[in-house]
Each structure stands twice: as structure tokens, then as C-alpha cells.
Length: 205
Image 1 (cartoon, helix red, strand yellow):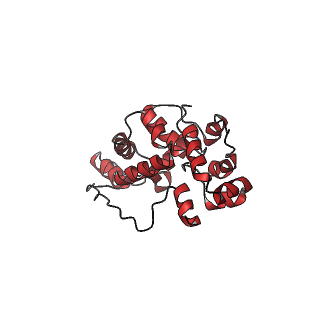
Image 2: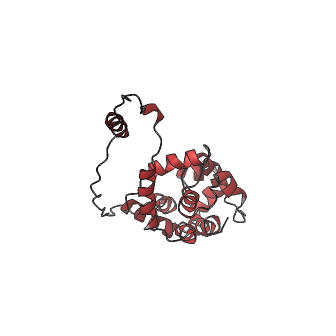
Image 3: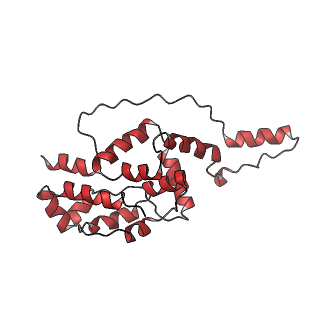
């Protein structure tokens, strides 16, 4: 197996030439909040043309509820969230499901950053908190709870810096770590990383 193909496995990529079928999104009428605010002001007989400032936009509850409903079609319990990210194969599958449901990850990432008081959090831990009211923990706290018996902690520095990303072994991280590079060359990194994911995401924190 070529290096690119092996790296593709570690980064949850799809094989070259894969065909994907995506659903056509439902037609949703989206009205700019500024228009709604101004119309309400007119109906009440007041001039509130400056009531909605574009610089003060916040994530509205309607949008969050729409995304929550999409995620609830995917995850039925907190343990299902953990299981969905506990192996390379499962992560590839769940990423396709999230894409199929047209989940707005960008919106949820922004919301997670606000909710965490600007701490980097894992997508997995946000879903657990958002859907099932578990504590929203930072990436720092998640790492502290993990027993790195497999010696893959070189992955953590890159992981901690990226908000809303799941744990992965990128080309850059592998090249910077002598241990990961050796495991990669010997084609031992995939099974070890897969085992590590079971501990990292499968364990209840």
C-alpha cells in the first residue's frame, strides 16, 4: 500500500474515485433577522431601524434547534455518540451520515466556542453536551482523562490547537514525531491508532 493510501486511512478520507450521493436539501425560507426586527417595529408603530446591528449577531435558537433535530436522527444516546467515533471505520461512517443530514458544522462550531467560553472543544464532546446535557469539556480536560499506554501523545499538540476537530493523524504530525514516523513506515500506525480511538472516545469521561 502506497503512503498516500495509508495516510488516507488515518485521516478518515475516502478512496480515490469514490462516488457519493447527497440529498437535495429541503427548501427553507430564510428571512434576514434585520428585516424581521424592522417589520416588528413598523407593526408596533415605532421606528427601530437600528434595532438590529449586524455586528451584534448571535446564534439564534431556531437555527440551533434545526441542527439539534438533524443530530437526533443520527444519535439516539450519549453512548452512541462515543461509539460512533471509537474507530477509524466508525468515524468515516458517521462523517458521511452527518454530511447526508446536511448538519451545519460551522454554525455548531461557532456555538461550541461561545458555550465553552472560547476554549477549544472536540466535536464529539459538543454533541454529547448539546444533545444529552453532559458537561461540555475542553480538549485539555479530555486529554487529562486519557491513559496514553500506547504512546501516541505526539498527536495531542496538534489536536489541542484545533477547535471542533476530532483526533486524527495528519501528515505534518507524523513527520514531526519520530515514533509516529517509524510506526507509519512499518505500517503499524493504523491498528495502533484504531485501538487508541477506542480508549480516547469509547471511554466515558
